[in-house]
Length: 389
Image (cartoon, rainbow, N blue to C red; front, side, top):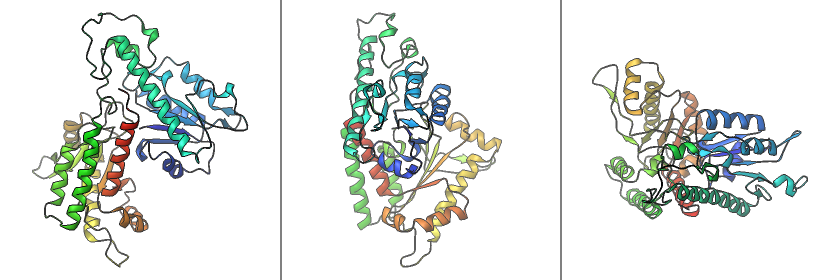
């Protein structure tokens, strides 16, 4: 889920906040600001101008003489639309963090909930987030029925009239959604097969255990096959079906780069294309009993750097190759390297950061197999707990 968190506590770091919201979001989908002005700029730039998606806002009350009611009133009175023109921005779920010195019924009026004892009361946080998201999605289901669509199948009812004039009754869906006869097909939560996704978690864990005990020569390829059969491990909720092993030719030669997967963002996602490279989960990063990185770990980083140079160097022929698969050229790209175990990564984080610094490549996201599994489990939990449609 994509979250905007507005905090008045500068000592509460982004990493600490992200850990608090970990069940609901991932690093690249968590947007954190310490001022109302910057938060409003974020909403203007991404939701209103770029038509991107946001799931909910959480904010403190007091900001040096200003308060979150200003931002709330601006949203609730807005006629703008967001998320590929599907939703009214005034419907966006907005949660307020309890301020015991100022809290009152007047202050909390208009917010979708008040979070008590933040961030310590995780139970209340989970309840309030779950409640406001489910309520928002219930309103979508009501709107779909109002315009003649079955909320589960999104197929038109046979007796639905051709024209629709009761736009004022819509709580979440936009007039554009109705007029364009749109459907909520690109949101993972509209019709998730949670049973299949949860079964894939067990299959992934079983495969890791099996190959840890009996490493296969073709282990990397086996996981390629698994990800092609279970693409949500790679694409999550913000990307289309991953592009697999596409040949990106170099300067009209027969040589080419071949990233394992390329993730193209959904139109409504606040994300950049992701280059996703897969290495063995049994492959070590550090020499045993030595404070030194293994050469093949460095080679893996260098391989992703090669992709970075291809995607970000202004070469007309290379850009034509990229556009062939992604549909257009993007200003920025994301890079993920799947490799190794969480334990090894955790105990050698300093060495890994040194390696990134040596290559001048801080933005590479080193993900372990254990972390990928936990991320997918969190996604499944969110879909299961907040499913309405």
